Image 1 (spheres, helix red, strand yellow):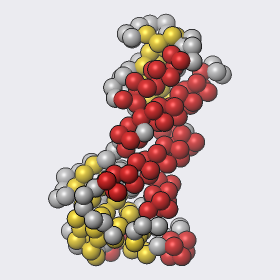
Image 2 (cartoon, one colour; image 1 turned 90 degrees about the horizontal axis):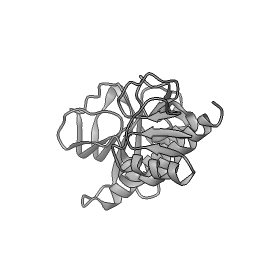
Image 3 (cartoon, helix red, strand yellow; image 1 turned 180 degrees about the vertical axis):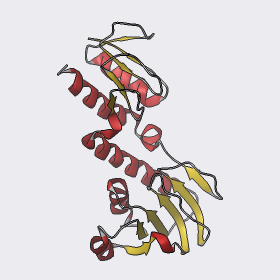
Length: 208
């Protein structure tokens, strides 16, 4: 089976190597009549096109529940490594959101840090209050060493918060002591994330 993989970071280089090691033929240049294409932002007129988030491809890997959950695990583990490697001393951490990524992240951090969860609804309120401190998103205030945002497409007012650092895993906005970290798996676990991508694409291509 022949394909094309657009190499744009360390993860996609590993992805190409993994496909080659499994007997696939991977073209260095994009050409017609290949069996599949893995791209970043391109639009290709072919049925078997894959990307992480590109709406112009038939298969958007990040929409697969299994891939997303396992990739969230890599994100949570990678951010934990970054936090313990930071020179700054963090004790009180505020996590915005309580979806799958935030839950995994809070679970990893709770043993060593004082965790407050701020979510948009009351869906998991009882669970949150049993394990963590809780803060309403509409009443953001207080003092925290680190704020971690996992909420996409939501305007967040940080003005009443005092903090040392914001790590944003879901958005890219401007702010004081703010860092957008949208690609933690590629930074810390590029091979493992590439393997997850391969498993998804390989699974699809086995049935086409």
